Image (cartoon, rainbow, N blue to C red):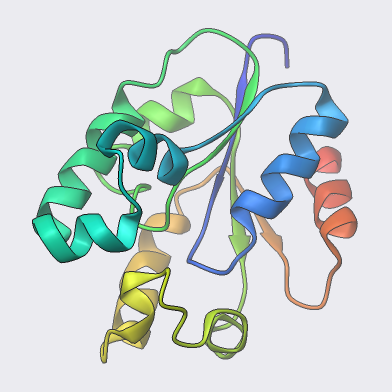
Length: 162
């Protein structure tokens, strides 16, 4: 798997950032999180970007950040929940293995509740968003069920796949 990016995708609360950090340590690779890259680029938290510039601006920026990811180099990349979509999937699948961290909507609700740091957590159509995004996540190369597993167990499952 030399020179490949391992990309983690999934709905908010699926563990992309947490699992990504541990996976990167175990693989001795750098870890990048598109949400953190966006915050650095804008100099503002995602909630502030949503409040001041709107979700459409954020989604366009998210798409541009994902597509500007260099194609060379080994790394672990966590892509924000809406960043794995029709315009980014072909690119990310070319970079290396894509892993969908999957869980139930009930577990999402338990993990994120109405977290003020997550703008969509308060959306009245959160379940609808979850269902619509599942069709994109299903286009990842691999799927790992995260519910009921520790971070290390999820990382072990990913390592067996890649």
